[in-house]
Length: 290
Figure 1 (cartoon, rainbow, N blue to C red):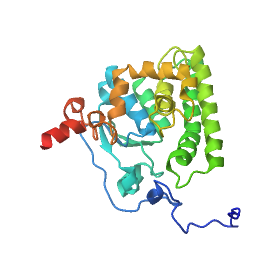
Figure 2: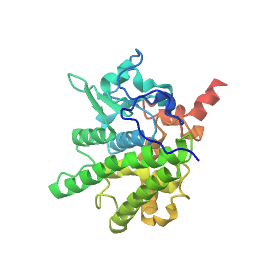
Figure 3: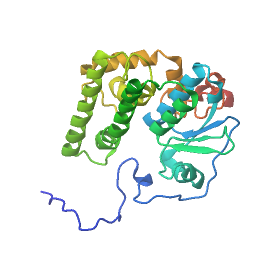
Figure 4: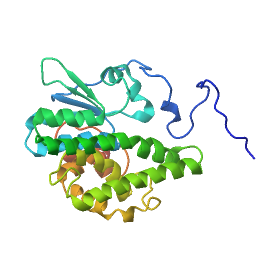
């Protein structure tokens, strides 16, 4: 029988954390190497990867363009977090937390950096006057759900996702603890969507864009291969809402940008213009290289 773990009086980092992301986890911040970020021709420069947090912003940008906001044109540059790109000096300069996504707005006299996905969604919504209600009660409802997602993400990703899918060993207590919380959060959302077409009310908002890649991803089976384990069929209102969002072309395009896994036809590693969806997906790039 293994002896129970007794935490030391002072924790020290003396071995890798283990698991799929052990090579990039560390208890200190800051750059590990010098590397400048590329800059494209559009006002908005996005540095990201198509994780759920990254998808929030690319969905928002594609929705803005679909709504006719030409100033929302953007360059999306791929940040390979498994390779440690987020610890390059250029990236750390725009996000000292070294997490994707990060955005630089170069449309004004001085570049503006924005990091944290929720902050980017709010920044873009306010900049373009779109997808965020202005009436006080409706705005409060939208922002409440936006921050609900931001607060719950660590339980779903770093908690359930890590211990269920990525940890070097399966720990029953940890998986049970975070599965319980993930199911509770799914139930919160399902009950809300039983009474409302969209998360914040009758209109599609940044709350939907923030929540969909995480909770829509869970019920659709895109995250951690855990839909059956979590009983995704129990959340029929979440599934209805997710299917509704997937009917939106901008959502489908946003899910493709900076994607490096799955079908090559659904991967657009970098996005520098609308035509890239037709010419530069990974299947098209592979065909052109032959």
